[in-house]
Length: 403
Picture 1: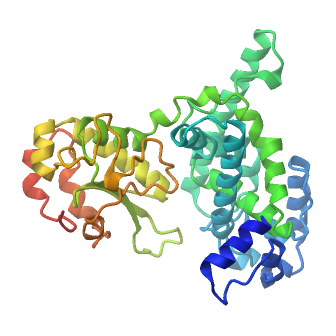
Picture 2: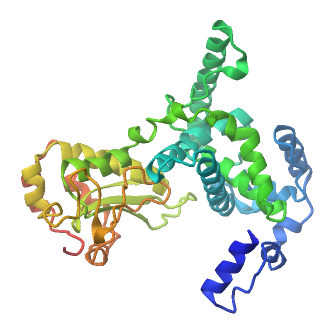
Picture 3: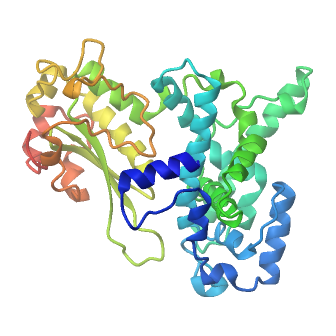
């Protein structure tokens, strides 16, 4: 870590970044007032209950409480911020520890394979199941009856799936601990707040431990690694992902390399909930379709599914005429569907949903993203998968830039 810190300092060459050791970051960190304030009885009780699940003693129980506060919960009740900042931090930490595990355990696997299998490890599906396994959903503070209803439905389904896997193991003469570890794959997707809690909890541990990354690794080893001891269980996980499908369909079936999925936050409507995210699929600067969801991750999945329906309803000829696509003739897509923009062969089939922008490096990308905030109504005309490309062409004059 220290070598990496020194390397960053040399690269940025700025007076704002003078760290030479990992511990220097902590020395420069000023704890927020809410974290240092005296803990209430309920916050201390939460820390005690959580410590029984994961053997870590929180020095700052108010920090832990933050990991369980939904954005809909009024700040005035606990005087503690919601989990969004901790979730942001934990999201990156989880990504890092999973990459480290896969990279060292499978030294001969290529980036595509590694990325596809990491998708399962950091997926909302898995983290939601882990949240329920811990019972963390019981500690969530939120003010939204719809969310509570969704949580209740999901908890019933994922609990039944786990119990069924354990019963199957016993019936086959195996230990409960040897049950099917991928039991969570075929259940419905959890409400987003459940995976958010896990990520926020990881972030809280990291901050509370004075940024001790070893605590993050210990959490992974004790609670996540078991599910992925046999990663072959998840060989087809990424292939079932709509974003992966869309990526492959455009490259391999349509021979197109100039496309992207763009997500932008919509204006806050003042309902106490986080603003929704609008994700759009753009092909050669034209908006194909868009979908709104509560997170960029969910929005991109939804819009990819819708885009696939629309694309499959038309023909290759219609596609190339509508978008004036000549990527294959220009050598931007190889015969095997591989992207070859600027001479770099970058297989994008398993790009991580958490960071995917699917914008391939090209001179026209800047033009195609001049107005990412395409309104929802502007994309409505192309949301009917039964309408051919030629039939919707007249409704697509809201092209964002040109190629």
